[in-house]
Image 1 (cartoon, rainbow, N blue to C red):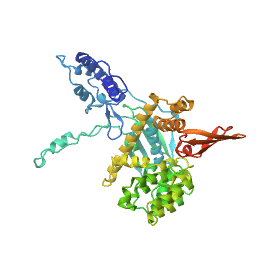
Image 2 (image 1 turned 90 degrees about the vertical axis):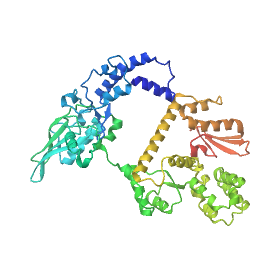
Image 3 (image 1 turned 90 degrees about the horizontal axis):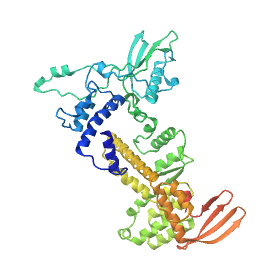
Image 4 (image 1 turned 120 degrees about the vertical axis):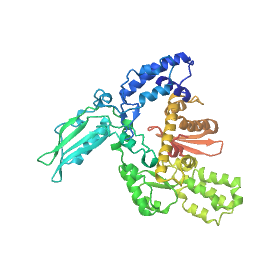
Length: 519
């Protein structure tokens, strides 16, 4: 049954071609034994049901290990697969003889395991050691056990696997109170987390006031969780420094941003980013200057360009020529002289000379106009608005301003998981498909193998444009340096500086420096 569902899933996702359909009789023969067989194997692995409290796998009772017979009734009529699954995966309260299976010892290096005779300065050290062993290496949750005191000093203490013992059966108590005030008391359907596991360590306090492991049991009677689920263990749930650093700010004052960037640096091991992009927040700018003095700070073009509508007349908002010239000036200028010339012409042509907002934006032009920092790696993320627009549009599908903090956090986490899943799909596509080449050049073929499809598509547009619209105007060679003047059908000239010994080329358009894509 598991194989059938996996096959159907692969067919649906397009990873597998659909084969001939199974006949009803064949499916009945395949589903019955396979279903029970898979379920038994999963029960032995401890994967049939999850533990709400610890994330550890429950070991359901296999009292009816001959569950294969349950897949069919006495008259050979097939029971629905869901019926069989529900029977096999529903754990019931039974004696320890039904729950305990063969002992299980986690595969952990000997140097990382607890051992009789180990000594610790404090109980806090004992707890940290045992939890580190359980969470990071073995894969089970820890429960702090009972202790014995004398003169307010703890002399002995237990640290258990969280699945030690059994919970008290309160069914009778619930039945006794079912008639109170004529209403039947509702009982919660709580999953059983205890299975009588004996794994533990027991420490005693010696004359030197240190704690020593006096006895221990390493074996568990249940499976442990896989590494990618260990963060779900109940005793391993805690707020990390990185999460604390991502907390919401109570206000937007300088001190709040100073705290935020200090926390960010701490979470990143003291390593500051090369480039940081923000909106026009004065408090944030001041805090960056204090805490991240070596980081290049630039303003988000998307936020600035979004405010253009608010600062022009209605007639200008509908003027297509204005928007074309503004976009060309801001995004397509390749030299400072070119930008300033275009800006001044645009201001005069559209009668914006007295516009205070445009005047202020020109004064801070070095912080948001790409040509002023085009040689900074990743500056390309500031050059167009598509990245900011798509990010805002994406997150707006999941969150809005009226959400509570908890709901916001859950939705934000869901959005990130969705993004990661989409990235995995694109990675899979890049690994298993090959883009169509447009030129016979070796460079295009090489890049098709090292770039993802999305990046290769951008590179391919450049290489096709070079073939169709660019031509060599002149070549000058000086020792190891080769200077090539490139003309184009757009009547723009660019100079390529090529170092023959280092095999490094640079173009005055600086597309590679800012976007990481050769022009």
